[in-house]
Length: 300
Image (tube, rainbow, N blue to C red; front, side):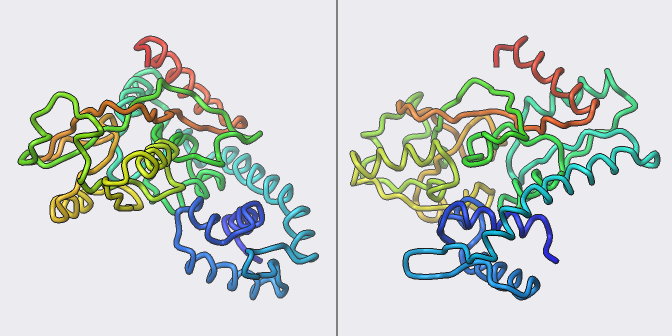
């Protein structure tokens, strides 16, 4: 047998028809995904994919396995969550998936208010790394995603099992050392970045970053693009050492000594929202209702 997480990764590969594309969406390296496929096929005792220079296709048995297995996996995960929720020994809880180095003021503000209104419900903040974030959400490891994840949720937002609470889009800006001449400016124009090196999310991770990347590759060839998989404090060290400029979202970054955030004149909106499951527990629904009220009240 294989885990539901691995099963969903096989599904993603089948949908993409490419190990490389699937690896990008799943936020893992292609070699790691190849090894997982090999290990899964060894456990199953049959080959799921035929591989060629053009990509991957399902074998006849692989097609049957994934098509007939998907509703079984869905039912299993739903049954697991239902039985877990029925366990008397488990207190009521709302589990929020968080990300390393990402700060969500909205979620944490709602958490404080929720605890005052529902003191008998435990709020759990469960940190997940990018590679396993959405697989963990689909498997029921947490109830609510971070609001920043809407921008990274390509392929995961529009599903029958999920709902999205949308927020107003925000803009990408740049983060530079305070010693950089750009740090003293109130607004930076794209033309002022010509000849510079920009640290941008690897293609396929973020819709807004992909839009910016497409524009730069077409209209600003003198700007060098440096890929990075996700934001971290270590990334700022690399930014300074490489004399580069980091593209980021100010709303989700902590204040960092010796660095400053500067707005840009470009228009590449970061779509924001919080994702949760339609079949959520009553306490999770209460959290979502409070969240919606907070968004409406503050025009977020």
